[in-house]
Length: 214
Image (cartoon, rainbow, N blue to C red; front, side, top):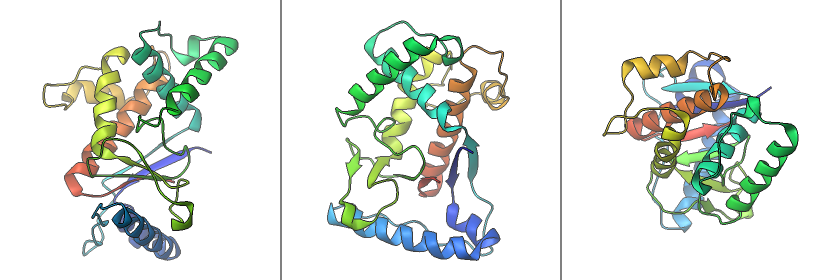
């Protein structure tokens, strides 16, 4: 069992899951209403006719997300980096404590987000949002900005050996290498997770749709 990430979720649900569509329509309505309270006007686009295939549908084990967060934190602190696969358990636990320390600052969109649910919306706001529990927004009310998540991914890319073009895009060769999960590649899990989030961010900005963790 792991994390699924979808951009264009309503279109996907319209094709495959009528009950799921009803739930997520309501969830997006709650999200938009809660954002409006904070002065953010955003709504998930209507379903296309006919419903399109989801712009991005990806997934990976929950642990992969923690592995990427760990690299993000260690790189930001200027500390030595080792792949999760090559790090002993005690050191990894100490590194995870550092993730919690950095998350407590409430500044990072990558860190301040539920592991298993919630949203990144294509609106540029500086700090992650923590919506009222009464709003009933999935992901414990934590909402991130697609633009800010993309910026954080760009900052950590060099630490993972990922080359971005000046406009933030990937070459075809780099994208192909990232999409092909090779467990023998250094930072394989971290790079694969980075790539899936990067794809989702680009699709979210292109279509004005939320990135949904579910």
